[in-house]
Length: 105
Image (cartoon, rainbow, N blue to C red; front, side):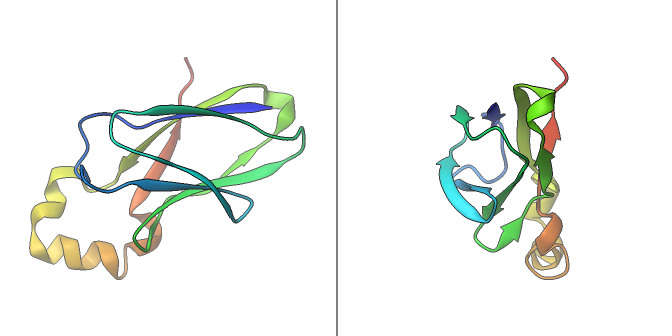
């Protein structure tokens, strides 16, 4: 089973890498403007991203669904430049800091 993750070039966290986890094990990292494809065993997996303590939503990968494509982004974007929102994003919003969005085509 294959899956692809795209990280747009226009991203608030320009200098930070996102770390890619599959079933709780780090399998790679992705920088701004990159697209990476991974191949894994044909069984169900859990995929999520992290950035310095912040997490994304987790998605289930099912081999019956074929090659999946995702885009990763931070949730707050430019609004995170506010110190109050930055504080929220590393405390209460830590588990929702990034998002993985399935691309339909």
